[in-house]
Length: 85
Image (cartoon, rainbow, N blue to C red; front, side, top):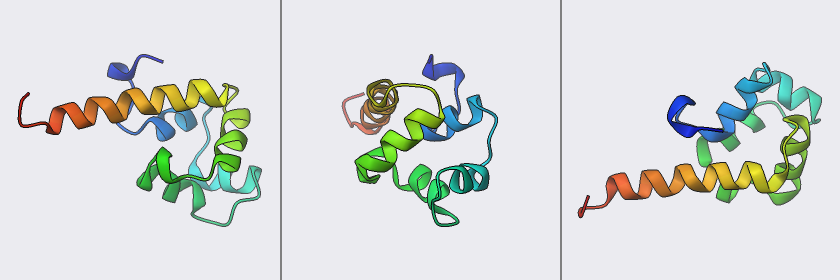
């Protein structure tokens, strides 16, 4: 996934790639309503690992690929906020 061409939120980008809205993901994975939107808002690092695995399976990527893309985005955000940049 090339992040420069994706929405700023990587979890949202992966969801968009499979053409689902957040409510559809919640229903597909038996999450409480609003869970997917919350994960997209709070970020990957605070999303339970068991649910990351479920999201990765639904999005047809490995958890490592999902995690890697999110980590790259987090790194980009950290650097953009750095006073040295």
